[in-house]
Length: 341
View 1: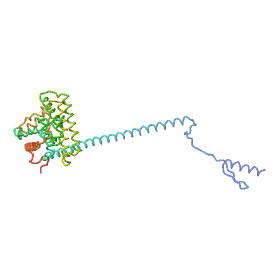
View 2: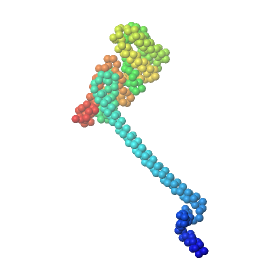
View 3: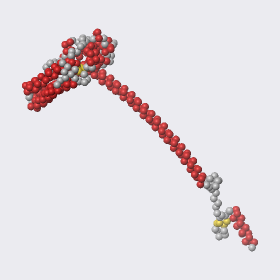
View 4: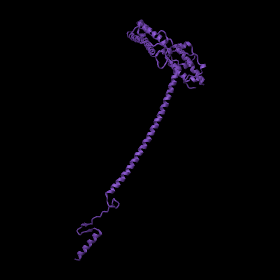
């Protein structure tokens, strides 16, 4: 009895102290573990409203962070756009400087080419017009009393036109009879050629008197020019007068008919053109000639047959005038467009 009470006391003490006991048969007996964990609610009693409040706070923080990120992106876009605009301005200025230099080089090259005595450029009036533009730009630098004189015979063979009638060969209006080229002087063209010549004289005479050309005469004249054009093509195809000359003569004939048609169309629309382009140029020297052409809005037209030598003579006079102006401005005696050595 006393032994049973001692065993019960030992088991009670072991249960209270939590120390394991070993049974007599080798089985270990332990007390159940006690787990201690911190409360996520800081010791307060659990409530679902806490999760809602914490989630709302996290949402507001992330929302403000997103707004801050968007603002940084907007500022970065403004910086990029500013650099783009600066590049556009730089590119615009660069293009302006580049094309200004290109125009200056082209103008200098054209001027130097106009100074050279090139037959094609002089006879077509291109070189004369380049020099004319230079003299107009430097008109204030010239002294009219010292300008280079122009013989009246030379001026009588110089033809002028305007932008409105450019390429019409207005020199044809000065002659009382048309200067027919070789191919159109053949007997095969005699009948149509005489009809065109007669109608042209009639229209020119009436226009000189201030009368508008009649529609019937204009239609007959233009029809005659078309017929001559067709005969020229037929003559080339059949090889009249030998193939060695017919090609060159055909080109001259086609060019003459084109110029004559342009003159007829000009007289039909503007009869006053006959007086403007046919009157003698009222000038005694280069300065007066340039001033008159500037006032009337005229420019040099291409030379007709047998007028080339007078164009060359005028070209030399214009070059002398350019050299005189450059000399008066204190420039060295050199070809225009060259740098002083």
